[in-house]
Length: 315
Ligand code: FAD
Image (cartoon, rainbow, N blue to C red; front, top):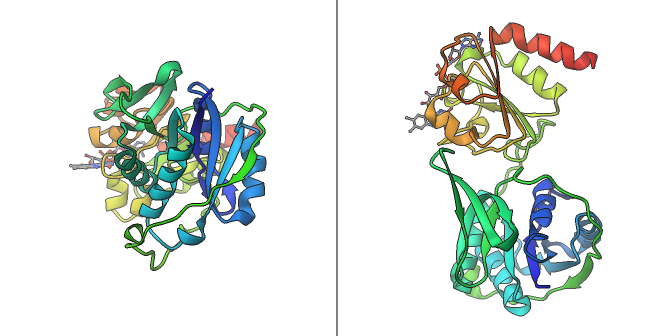
């Protein structure tokens, strides 16, 4: 059975959940092998994590030559690995940096690329949600090694025993790939909450909060959820842009999205429409958001959310 390479999403010393989702999807295409670009000292921990989700191998590309540079060296490293193992496909978690890596890799391997997949079926049929979630598109790469970036929360990670045999893979990075250096990085302010694009549950607030996110945040904390915001809330200066969901913000696809005091403008929908279950609280029963929800509550969020938070606490 051919290998399917899965790029490990490793941040702050831990393997992130999208890696396990991709390993689960990879099994539909072949034998999953994880690829870790990072310090060799972290390899044992990564192997421990990915073996529980069926990775038979873990290729470790030590980042000594790569660290400190933007995406080009990573694309080159993956190219060299792909040329050695001839994988059936390469799966990459969707993200700003990783999609650029995927695009560069596709050019280098002269292969087809599909970005922001929400599902992958046996036979390599890839599902995307396009035009602000109004259409579902099923496609397939027909040239070279299929390279597919997958949105977080697209699959439920399934545990499966793998060997996760560690194999160091040495790469040679060209000078041409080392042209853009990282000068400084600033970590996201620690909120104790999950990252918006990875969260299984998101509680969002809009203009209807009137700038008071207390009830939204209390519910989010009770549900171990991330907090999101509409552009109106961001433009009002109530939350930073990193919280914005929508066309000009982040695209999210959680298991549960709670929209509070958000009218449901098309540009907001564009970023959250593929959420598995959508719940809205809005005091206007005519609000467009109610057209797309699974459950809706007509009411004042400052009353409904504290009651909901209290009810969850009691469980
Ligand atoms: P409003 O539309 O004003 O809705 C507020 C809602 O709160 C209303 O439905 C009201 O009934 C309800 N409400 C009021 N008080 C309460 C209460 N106490 N309890 C319960 N409900 C209450 N928007 C985004 O969100 N993300 C984007 O990325 C984005 N990109 C854009 C890009 C472009 C090019 C353009 C033109 C617009 C974009 N917008 C985006 C803006 C978008 O069109 C809307 O203006 C915005 O989403 C509205 O935010 P809102 O729903 O919070 O506010």
